[in-house]
Image (cartoon, rainbow, N blue to C red; front, top):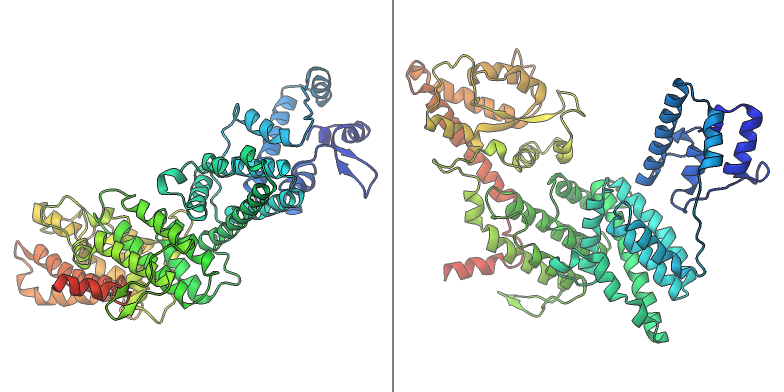
Length: 550
């Protein structure tokens, strides 16, 4: 950047001294970065800063580009203040110094990396793991494995970048899921993945015999392959990189991604897709069961007292399943469990029944009269209503993960918001009041539908009878909303309004109107939910019913 502000002769000298060596066609950067960032650094950062020359595919690339832009802005500020580029160059050459330490053995570089970085910005657990694995390879004289790790790590980071899981927290969670499954670690221990890895691969103990060295090399190779495959499924789940994935699997991935919270089921998800190689009817069946579990136990209103309730059991199930440690030969009714997949299915059904039985799940959709809860604040409401829309409008392709789009990133006609049918605040009041019974009806599940944001804004704070023409458009042939649930609700509302026509001026009219409509909506919603997230077809449910009957 500084050299770009010098005249041609001086720039050529500075470039040759500090940036590039060699003749044209054989130029080599003086400062060479690692394999992940080298090409981007040389084609973009050291050139004109245009990412079109080599698009950024890693978070590290974005950091390098940000650094270049920061330096450009700083140099412009100095130039505006009258400080010349020549004087800046002179300061760098005469007053900037470096301390250089060259390790005698390659093995020292791993220790240096960890010690130096522990005194600066905190490294992510994933960065520490790579460094330690490279260090082990040097000590084990496994040069080829070291090269493979470098190559695989580039792909791993690109996959995480595609998944938009690049923060230290995201990387830490990814590592935690992987070590829990691959090394059979429980939930608590897996939180210290890097430290546990150093215990599992204690290089000092490993070096005592050739057999232990060979075992360590196999262990490293197996773990890195697991990490790389897991990162690919991260890209498929979160980044929608679906090339080569069966359509039926993609459909389940879309559902799980749209749930927005997957922490409890991720070890099981990775164990399933990796062990079953990402395909087949059995995989789809078990992934659907995971989606049901995640919704009923962790998304349904008030089902568990904590967000991580039961996570330890799910982590254990993931590692036991992946390593073929689940109990088989168990008889469930007339069915004998003979495979790990059947055993896992039975265990997941047991988990759901324990934490979110059918009756408890149904009750979670009903609001108690004196409950302070409000379904508008339920984190699973939009997911619930989008699934409902897909059910009642099967002829239309419903992109379930459209609910993940932010309000700012979409047009008001495309963004689907949650609409109160009985508005929380009505400017005209029209006889509505603020009694506790009215507030209760406004908080019930039946009082909500999905609605395009533009239409929602148009009908804001209006009474239901004023909203209906807005929902349906100026005439019934030109419907304003494209959502089937809105039209279905509007038809019900018009029927209820007609049935209460004689009571239009009575004091309790609005309460009767919305209570009746709520009942209709709520009954439909509950019937839908009981079918959509049913576990009746899965192994173990029938036995549970028999036990309950006895």
